[in-house]
Length: 444
Image (tube, rainbow, N blue to C red; front, side, top):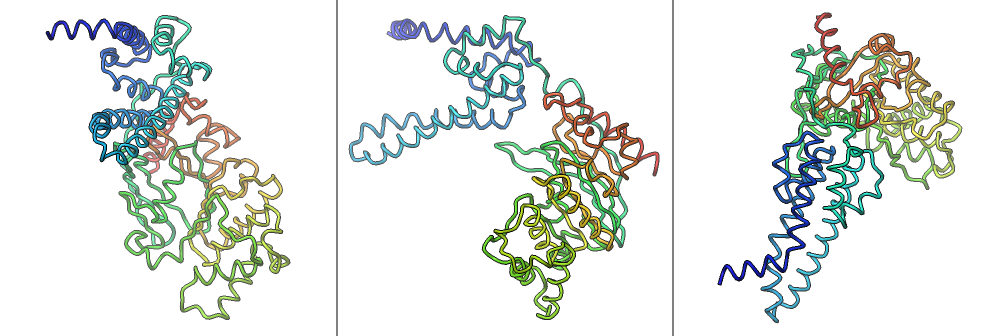
């Protein structure tokens, strides 16, 4: 009886088994090209996750795998719920859930195949082939010499070693000793940043540079205490993590997106910001004086009674920055404040920020167009992802030292140097991290 049952099962699913075998054979050849263990091509579901990982889409692959497992675990419920009339409502809810899971599953499958097309440098039209005719596509990509990966993720280079350097805290300025910053991504714990140590002196304007995903915003959030890391951050002799309540008025962050009400006047906007950001003991007279001072610093005196909605993009950006500067912080951080501004407006804004730094403040600016205002910066800090895809410190020093270190007159070229080949870069991050360590150790 069992033999007859399995015989009928095989006959009724002959096409499926043949297609599955051909798909496996094609993946076996593709995995060889990608330097993936070929035995993984024989493991259903897991092989697609491993393929996604090879295409630098591991998180997408993990989510897809989770959806696949969840769908399999929930499938047996359909028989039970559909056969019980009193459970009709629950069956409809179950059906809706399964439909939603199927939709999400397809979306993540498309993302995986999109990453795979990028890995092989092929048009995204091939996604249709992978979705509808996966075994044919796998055989073509596996056996044709025209289909080769443009890069191999995670091979063969190893990440640069740790520096072993720790900055000595100063009573004046910002000292950061960040050992590690981790977070959960999907179903695994990943290291976002590690081994970042530096000291910023008061009166300096610092350019924070790095490619997309290098960890610039993550580092800033760790430094200002918004997201704590395995680190010790000292500002003017005080521990930012332990003494955050007493330091919160000394630290300000201007996000990339303007958070501002359009129907208020400029002066009301700054006054409301002062009420929120200045200590409660500040008297109204002092608060008003501070608002007038900030209006002057950012050249907004003549616009104080103008509605924000009627301001130009550059003027509105100045108001947004002035809102955060109202507390007179010692550490002032700005995330792409010149985004969307032309060269003239960007330079005007950066000149004002440089003037703030000259008042003994530490000003850190993230920008993707540094060369047009490079002369206004004192120092350059560069982050990049190493071979383990962890944000590392590639360089920290003066502008002139940066030009000499990277052997370029254009700082914007640095991003191309440190980005991985899969991102259109030269993939020199680990090489330059080690070079900077050698320079740092030589200076110790």
